[in-house]
Image (cartoon, rainbow, N blue to C red; front, side, top):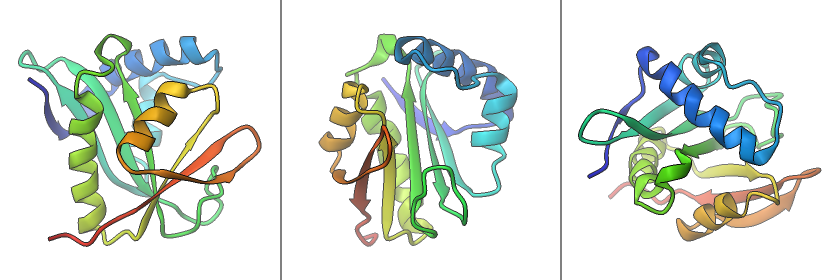
Length: 157
C-alpha cells in the first residue's frame, strides 16, 4: 500500500538515490546529491509542496515536486503557473506511486489557486510522457529538446 506525506529534510538521501538511478537511465549529468535535493526541491523558495510516496516500512518509493514558476525559471514556464517534477523508483513504476503522488500534488495546486501546471519532459522519456498524458496533461509546446505538457487545474470542490 502506498501512502503519501510531505517530504522533509531527512528524506533527501533516499530521494537522491532515486534521482541518481533515474539519471543513469536518462544518461544525464544533472546533480542528484542530497544537497541538490534540499536546494531544488525541499527548501526552494518557490516550493508549494514536495511529497514522498512511502510503503508500510516508510521506504521512499518516489517523490513529486510542485513549485510556482517565477521570473527567469529554467523551463521558461509562464510566471505564476505551477511546475511539477515526478521521480519514481524504477522498481516501482506502474504500481500506483505516481497516481498517489499526483492526488496530493493536485490538492496542493488547488489550495495554491494555480490555474495551470507545466511538466517539461525530454522526448526520450516515454514513461514520463505517458504518465503525464494518463493524468490529464496535454502537449502545448516544444522547448529545445523538451516537450511542454500543460494541465488545467480544476477548482477545488
